[in-house]
Image 1 (tube, rainbow, N blue to C red):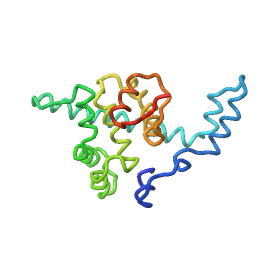
Image 2: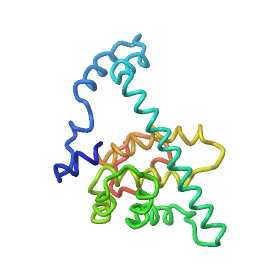
Image 3: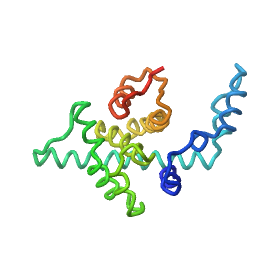
Length: 189
């Protein structure tokens, strides 16, 4: 959805288009109460439809990881290079041709023009950033651990927002590694 909005306007998204300022302010007010049930508050702010959409996106995230892992397995079987180090993963996750091909293979319902537009500027569109983050996580995918891999989804969403703000508040070493490789200049708080 973010990518479609950017494409229609042919400009970068504004902060208010990514984050609901009203919901954020409501949540901040309610969390000032030390006795608040913060899980109930988060659910109230997001709503049931958003939770269902998040669950669907998380399944998609895991399936994409499986498709990249399968591709890497095929490359290994043919004794073709597969990225191992953070620098090699950066090279693959930043290769516009690879990303466009993955978009065409995995995302069957996307407009035909999107992969070509991503080739023009890999950081310009939210979808390209999301695809790079997905690819990075997928290159770290371990088969048989789908539920654990799915836990990366929330970090991936957080990383997408951090790629726009230029800031990330985390002590997660793997998330910091990914962000420092994919999006130079990120400030860690």
